[in-house]
Image (cartoon, rainbow, N blue to C red; front, side, top):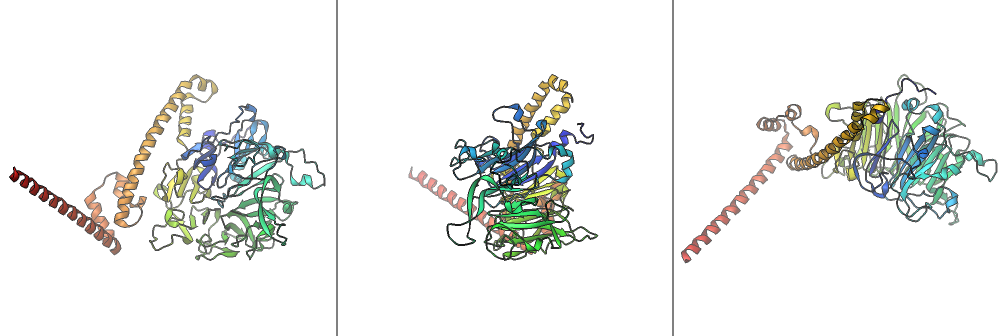
Length: 640
């Protein structure tokens, strides 16, 4: 089969991010050429880099088979998802027209099941749970270019990289720091193969279309639209003797959600202990026929069913049933809240969408202007009504949405730490944004973000894919380098992620130097080696400069905070210094005083008054010390 003439060049695809995912303190990015990059906290091997070291910049994940078998080599990753301490990836081996499923670093526990009973991982630890990574399997705009129809329904296999504290994986008891093939999914057939009453499993391998990682569970949708769940699963508690008693049990084998048999599950999201799924009304998905189902823990009303009773089985959210005027497009879950995007089913001249939220509202994560929780879906009224929202995601206790026009809004916990950036809050403010705050893009691209594609929220950080996939911005807490900007400090405003990685730039430079065909590449291998050496030197220099810059930024921030009482931001840099690289301190000082309000002038007066008093005090003490020394010296001389 001949390739399409319009296929993008590999160089462009390697620089284009088509999927992003954020975990508790790590971030994943999927490039258009099928490669995966990871950065942030590396404990338990969640980055898949072969170590538990943190990575401050994007590093490529190597999916080469551990046994060295070339026939198992993975050619293209097609989907990613990140849980609190684990990551999932779905991949295809183009040569043999097969698709694989990977799972790396689940911090997991499971019941004691023997090796021959299938997949062995699957209940995640709850520490830092509730981070829902709401990413699409792959966006339709990229589908025709990257994944031809002949590759969409392929055999599946699973790779795993995780901690095995109780030996529940049927492997050694150590953490797995590299992606590991999980053969167990091949032993399972789609739910339809079990409906004839036969005890024999289908010989046809399960075909997985998308994966989703949550805090304590993992989910997969197969090519027939069936939903599978494993890990910490909702369960009817029969031991108590009370009907409807609810609990969670560990399942080490993927189980189908039988409630959806005969229907097609299109999208799914999971929070700490609750699940949301968009399911077709009929056997196949047609138009706006999706129905919203929820189940699991409901202690804060996060199921949107109007009460706080937990559910073992899926139930329809009546606000988004088949008769509802609203059609749901996207779903996302936080620790104890749910958010979704929906549009009107009735055709209209303008295509607009509305954000709905429900569940826990203690930190303003619902965006309703209060800390009140909601057990029914309610629209976020303070968002503009004439925009089309394209992407949504939830962190532990914050929510973000993106519009097609390039606007980004965020609300919820700790706006002062950058989750919902707003430097106007005071020490008496709780620091939570109860209503949507517009996040501005600083620098050359502002104030709107160019061509936004997708947003992902981690426990305490946010990552935005924009510029059509060629640029990344991040903000929030900078733990373990999770922002990907080479720093460990919090970012109060969006900062550029170092993308594409420097290694990719140098690889392309080396290849361009030696020409395009294989003969020239082999012939001029020394030039590529030289490019790699230059890359190594450049990386060392960059590390040194980054360290110096970080110290300078901290010093400037301390001085700025002492004088002005607020964090230092890019817009605080004088225009002349930003544009011309020169700085007339006398003129800038005069301009600053002229532009300052009464509050700033009072703070300046107090600062310099205190500073002057301190200087006078030091001078006085120094002078007294000198006089004492002179007296002692004079007495000593007379004594002689």
